[in-house]
Length: 83
Image 1: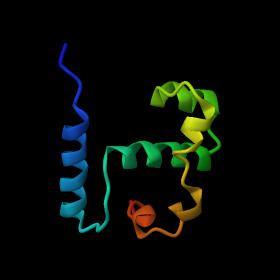
Image 2 (image 1 turned 120 degrees about the horizontal axis):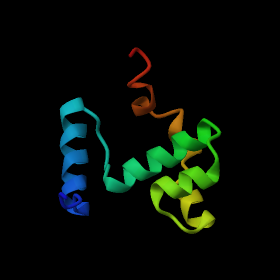
Image 3 (image 1 turned 180 degrees about the vertical axis):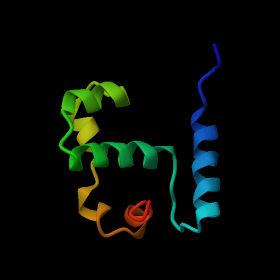
Image 4 (image 1 turned 90 degrees about the vertical axis):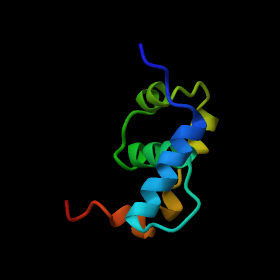
């Protein structure tokens, strides 16, 4: 079985992909988790399912990743609209 990616490896992948896409900002591995939690919330996915997929044990912790206030106004949120 392969070893999981380290946090540093994920951070570098995210940063390099943002650069390739021309997306400015300070994105990291946590950006992926926050984006997933935010999208799950926007789609009314069950909180228990979200907790299971993110590995969180605490509802307050996973809710801390929810970023609805800026999600829709960010140009990054519209990248996949034409797909």
